[in-house]
Length: 96
Image (tube, rainbow, N blue to C red):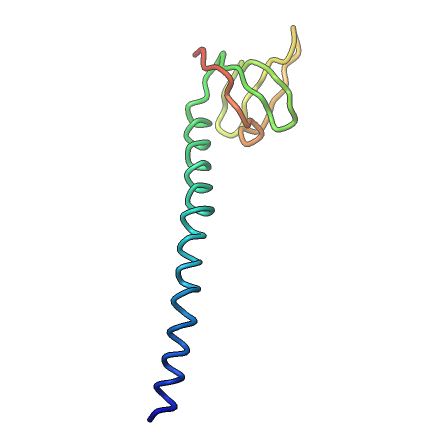
């Protein structure tokens, strides 16, 4: 019937632009975000003693001990703080 063709044509003309917008959104926003998070997780896995790091709180220090889920960071002479590995946002220099 002619009404079915009009409805089908209208549906197709609406789905294709939304699918293209979704595809563009995926490649511009979601994929780069996932790639960055994957790289960050790999860097945290390779965290070693004597690496200089910056935490999410902005604390600069040197890694003294690496555990499974935490890392002990020396922030000053005789001052060590244990951080969750997820709190380490940047590895400034890897000296290990």
